[in-house]
Image 1 (cartoon, one colour):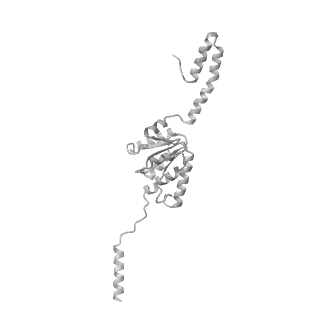
Image 2 (image 1 turned 90 degrees about the vertical axis):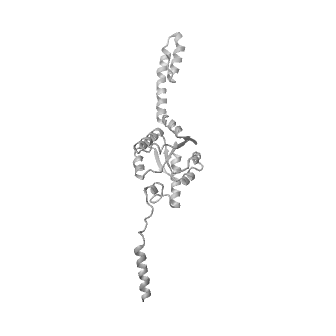
Image 3 (image 1 turned 180 degrees about the vertical axis):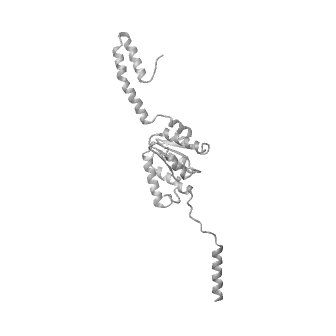
Length: 218
């Protein structure tokens, strides 16, 4: 009887001195990278992530990567609202990104899979996306630590400077508008040529061609 009471006493003492139970890791950073409440911890979740990334790649004109470390989930959620339509931002683990790019035009991106990455999948508005990210970095004081690392368009990798240069090019819609404007201007140029008298016809033709091509005379 005494021995039983002694054992029970030891058990009670051990319980009293044991530390509090540790809750599962549910830090915001864990969720951002697909862990915790994220969807990249189970095999099924990883498969869904890879499939989703493949869909994004299929619809993207360009993808861009930036550092993901040090960014809170709440910051990313707020930042998403500033992105142009057709752009998706997503943190993808390197192993899953590596699987997703297999057999696609973005395989060269494998060279960029170092460290923690956040990816932009851009359907069209590259300039608007880069502008939104730069504004976010400025307001969040991340300009020095979270500059664009690189990007890929049509299977070719570009560094930060290359991405910036590409972002300044006109979008497809803008190009279509410029071409349409040039086409609409053609009838006016033709009418001017027809009305030009005698010896001036040749010069009128040249001027009309130059104006359509954006060349101005002195």
